[in-house]
Image 1: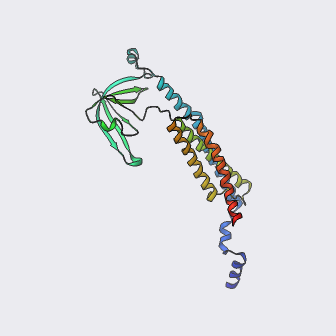
Image 2: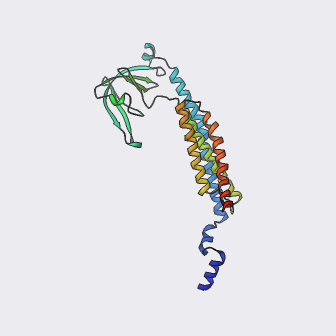
Image 3: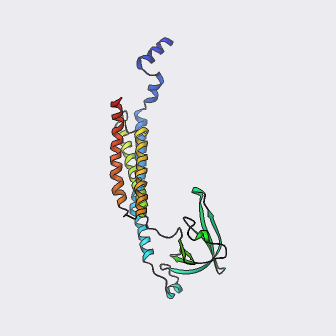
Length: 260
């Protein structure tokens, strides 16, 4: 029995268990393909929501904020919030903690012992790091939220202030769309060819492609924010670059095999 088992192992050129582990039933492969397609639909829905709802909403809010004018006395009496109202508040305490992802920058403010609230910031400067308990600050409010704090000519936007950073919205949407495309292709190949879906596997092609998609989307989105170019340049650049990368990564294993 021992001799027969050894002769079988040598005749196939690999251990007996390796062939069994490498083969996966067509039913299980097709089930994985269905799951991948369902995940691709979820990612596609996220992409649709970004470009149809999130990006236009942020853009409209930023334009409305930029177009808002100081509130008149009549608007203040009626409690209108779609204009810029000015309030003089007192700083109760500040938090300025830099701890990586757990960073916290906020100030607790009060108004004539009748109101108390907290505003958050994205970073400590230029104003928050100077504030101390008891300081008087000027707050600009819009639609019920404090947008800007100022003191002695130094102003700082709060986290609620709308920003013209639609490029990053677009980067997230493009990322979701490209991931949806990858998942759909990988799933469709498993349904069509359950016994032979190379090279559309996670390692190495799928992993490399996903890393490339992420790097390209944020590699284009961040510089677009810094330079202020229009948001639509993000998909216009990222999609063709990822498409070319997908082809090159697809050809890479074949060339390596030929070289071997």
